[in-house]
Image 1 (cartoon, one colour):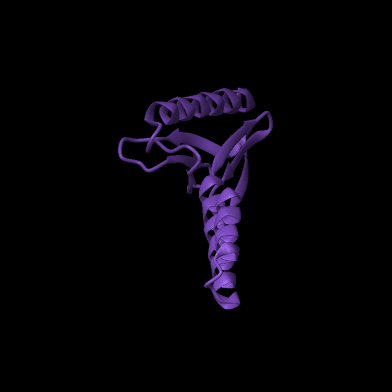
Image 2 (cartoon, rainbow, N blue to C red; image 1 turned 90 degrees about the vertical axis):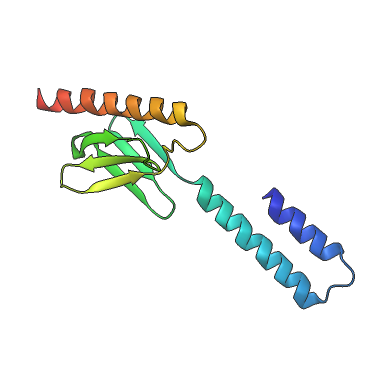
Length: 123
């Protein structure tokens, strides 16, 4: 929001720009803000009933029993969830890029939750 407001304000205050150029600045600011919001969107939310994985362009709700394993291997850009249907789901909200130790801790916590929840339903 701050970037959109700043760029738009600068565009409107520049007297040399034509109305079309000012509009293009505002459009560019809106596009930049949208991209930044998309990049900030990914997260993984664990709740009593299951896990919600929010990625750049999708949201997927999983029951605990649907998750077979949580993987975050060396070199992976983010965690992956192996699912009971044989597919794998990227959990982009757990990324080891900058906060490696935090991502490892989050993956371990999610793995422990999956093991505890699936053990409850199977046992």
